[in-house]
Length: 405
Image 1 (cartoon, rainbow, N blue to C red):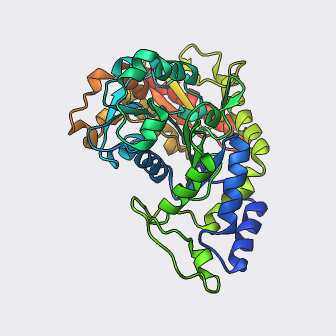
Image 2 (image 1 turned 120 degrees about the vertical axis):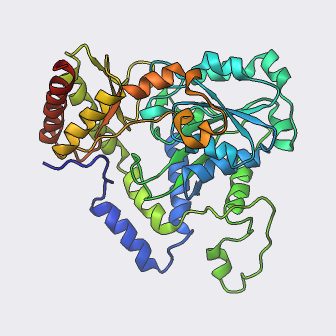
Image 3 (image 1 turned 90 degrees about the vertical axis):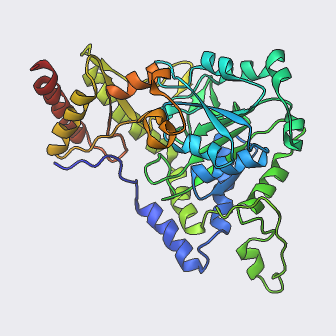
């Protein structure tokens, strides 16, 4: 039996939506993108949404719009994919890494300690679709002593008057905390629509705006759309209309727009999100039911009265093992046709960040999580038979590799 790690969910509805786009004669940014932006904004309960070509470009554009640049700091978790910090660096700013809690999300107590007069934003990550402690983060940035540290350098910073809270919601479309969508709890939420995500556009991202007054989110979304097209004041569809050739170009633009052919994939998937979520939860629950009887299995959080997970990943941690045994288990399962993964290699272990002076010794919780973490496959297409095959081989691997020593 061959079980891939995370194949995209492509059904007839997705194919039909893409074909409709191809047959329309318009495949780059146009009506499908506009529809996706409207439907995502409605789904996550934000004021406006802007489609882009990736999470990274979306986060970079949002931070640049806020005026974050050289000399500024943005607080991020050390335990995340590198894009979280790269988006900060692409603005010329410095990522300030802090450790995580036992549930793999950012440690808010360490966030507060890391804030300085250079801090312009906090960028927490909803690992695996489990929401961060946004209530604590909102409390921190609202404290008078924290607000008094904030040194505004641009008009958006002056208007906000505090640290910007941007969620890395690459994993958490549809996740909720205290009954509210993540996009309702932050200033800006950035979603990923990458090929392995719960909702995919093959490649893509979405900037979800919930800026408080005096900001006008409709006007801000219009500005970000212009900036996503190299600062060009008319998109290609508008320019193609008879007599619509003239345009202007504004400063600060990036070429990061999403094409309609990509948006079509995400539109079809978003419209059946409830089904996709239920299937992901089915897989998660079957894993948990089987593994909960073993004291060595540290199970990822699901959902409870305080939050709703998006069930993007199943990051299993195994007590009492190190990297070598973890890697042997991964190899054991791969030899039997089961693809697993690791989420994540902490950023301070990566050459890019290690060369900049980040030291993994400063992030013990991140290192510990990484050393004994294995991410099991989790997607709607997994059958119960496949899940049981994965579990049988995981248990056999643990017995052969851990218990035999």
